[in-house]
Structures are given as structure tokens and as C-alpha cells.
Length: 542
Image (cartoon, rainbow, N blue to C red; front, side, top):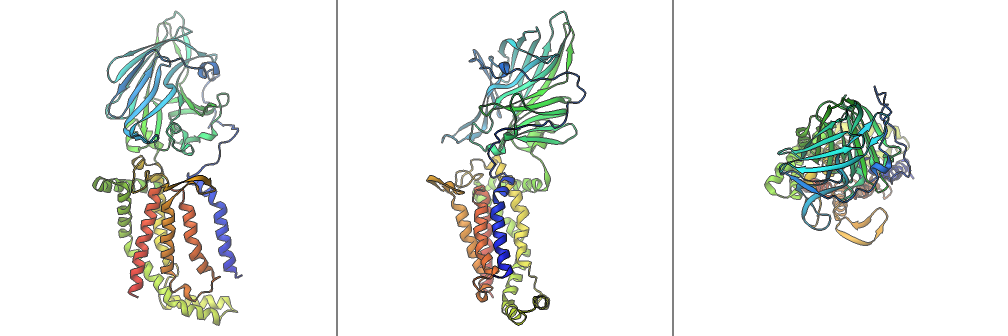
């Protein structure tokens, strides 16, 4: 075989070998969870002379009794259930978002076995003070008060206030010391037992625990790298907030003022993620109190909504030039959707708009390809004339290109220009809550593979569903390749790399796109059909 043939085969084999790692990097699939994990702190605890420890397993992992009393707080964005047994939020409902996981159209709900906003007091020696009583009182439709007593005598008043017009909750913790002696504590606020993405069949691979340092640096750990209660992941230093980030929704907890001293995360044997913000140690004087205000966000991964809830929270989803391009595309997509009222149709129209903007360059590229096709007989003759002198053949070929003002790489220009749009659109669609559950034709969710037909058994790589859109995309690419190579490959041998790649490329793209979100495949399919149609018209006028 010729060297170029061997090279084409090697490139194809290499692609297939790195394909699983490419999918993992793009967040399409993930490796199995690690059997054992040794989490490492982001940095050592700073300026702390106290031996900070976790609550004992008997305190945190014990079975919480059924609540004797629950109250409900609600506004347009959030509906929260607070239980007296845990003294925290045990259920959140997002009325603006729907849950289709059970085949029913109902408000999206999240549940927590321990609750969000569990306030604990830690003694200076490093022991958690157990609560001996919790009293719950509803003050209004949006406010409530939980009063707790600890074994050491410390009392905790914990107030809840829903913000109007935001998926945010303000919590005020007041640790009181009614005794005649000062008490030193480490105030800690827990989010116990949250299962944001697992309860609603969202992708575990996209779940991560994240913190923002006061320097502005984001640190994170994916779910499978979390340790156990005995070996948690710790982030130390001045921290502005901690977050449990899922595919579409996040829970973010931040001190209303100042920073936390430490954040920690671990997972239980049941797959629940638990986390805590630990404040700096403080001494409560006899008859005195210590107050800490906290903002909790429970809502979509939307930078604008996050930023409005608390300064700095928008950094949870922001980042990079591709994210900026993605936000622009999403804004345009939402604008089109406001008119046509269907995201599938909006994606098709967005594709038409992108192609319209790139049309001058695309037309120039297509003409360059047409020029290459017309030169193929002459290039083939040069190959035969200088078959024993590759260097001379290359020189004469380049001379031929210059004489006819043809750019041999011009045909790649449309794809090169499309790639930034494609990558930005991928990053947008895979996490866009707007497309969550959006349907089009047979597609039930444009942010997931289209799952046209369920198989009775799983097939390696294919899985348990046949995705129709990638197959249609392969057919469209084969059509486009035949149009572009109609004259080019007519004079080539069957084993010529150019002819082989014309066959292999659609299959490679089909493999790459098979498990991508249906909205993204729809974009590329539409783009391919547009390019092929224009190419067909260009061939007819030749």
C-alpha cells in the first residue's frame, strides 16, 4: 500500500482508540466510579489553632425520626418544606420546571433526608454538640423559625426567609449562650443528604462539588472523587461559597457577608453527597450570642439568576470564550423560540442564520473546491509523469495551483468556521435548562440522544436505544461527500486515500455524534443538508 493509504488507516485507527477518552473529556460519558478514593485538600487550613473535626458518624449518619411537624414556605420560584425533626429544609419544589421522569407532567421536586441548613455547634476540643430539642414555628407564608437546644446549653435560633422573585433563601443563625460561662464554638452549617441529580435520573457524570475562593479561583471535585465521612474532601481558606452542581440545577450556599473558613464534602454508602460550611471559631460570652447569615440558592444553572441571588455565584457557570459564544447563541435561540414556540424548529432556523452569516466565505470555499475538481485530470497526469520524483511532482502541483489561483485547503474552510459554533453550541445544549424536556417530532428531549427505538437488549456502543438522527446525518454526509467527490474520485483508484476518506469520514462523524444531544445532531444534520444543497446547485451550474 502507498504511504498515504497507510497514513489514512492509521489516522482512523487512532481516532477509534482515543474516541472513549474524547467522549469523557467532552462530558458525554464517564469512567466508572473509583472503588477507593483518597481526597486531597485544596490547601491546608490557614490561621487555625483549633483541631477541626467532623461530627461523629453516630450524629450525622443516624436515622432521623419522622417529623412531628412540617411547614411550607412558597413563592413563584420556590416551595420549601421544613421539618422539625432535622430543623432544616427537607424538600424543595421548583414550580417553573417540570419533571417528566415518571411519564407525568408535574413540578420538579428535590428531597433531602437530613435537610439543608442544619446548624451545628462544635466545641473547641473538636466534638459536635448534639441537639436535644427542635421547635418549629411558621411566621408567614415566606418565613419560619426553628429553635434548637444543644447538650452544652447553647441555643440556636434559625430563621428562614424566602426572597421574592428569586430561587433564593435567606437564613439567619443565632447561637446563644444562656449559661454563666463563655463557650467557644465552631459554627457549622450543613447540607445533609442532598441527591440533586440522582433522584431525577440526570447524569451523575456532570455532578460536582465546587467552591469559590475569596481570590476568585474556582475549585471543584467530581462526584466519583469524593471520599467518605472518615476521609472527606476539604477546601480550606477564605471561601465565598460552596455548591453542589448538577447538569441543570445547583444548590449554592454562601455567607451573606465575609467568608467561610472551610468547606467539606463526602458521600455516603447510599450515594448521597453531604457538605458543610465551617465558620471561624468564635467565643460566645456568658449571656451573649453569635450571628451568621447565609444565602442558599436552589435553582437552574443560569449565570444571570445566580448573580442576582448573591455576588460571585454567577462564576459557578461562567468561563471561557466558548461559554461567551454559547451564551450569545442561546440568547438568539431563545429569541427565535419566542416566535416559533418550538426549540427544534428554532435550532433549524438558527442553523440557517449561521449559514447565512458565513455564506460569502462558504461560497468562496465551494468555488475553490470546484476549481480543484476541474484540475484533477491535470494533477493525475502530473502524478503519472513524475511518479519517480515526488519532490518534482509536488513542485509542479503547487505551480498548477498558483496558475489557476486555487487554494487546496479552501474546501476545509466551512468546517473550520463551523467548529467554534459547534463546540459552543454543544457546551450550551448539554447543560441548558431551557432545552431540558423540549420535544420535536419524535424527540422527547433535545438535550439528550433522540432514542427513536428501544432495543430488547443492549448492544456495545449503541446501548439500548437506536438514535435515528445520527443515522440520518451519516446519510446526509455520504450525499455531500458524493457531490464534492463526483468528479474528483472518478479518476482515482479504489485504494486511493482521498476516496477512502470520503467513505470513512461520514462513519467517523456518525460514531462521534451518536451519543450527543439530539439538538446538537439536529444542528449538524441541518447544516450538512444546507451545504449539500448549495453544492448540488453549484454542480448544476458548472
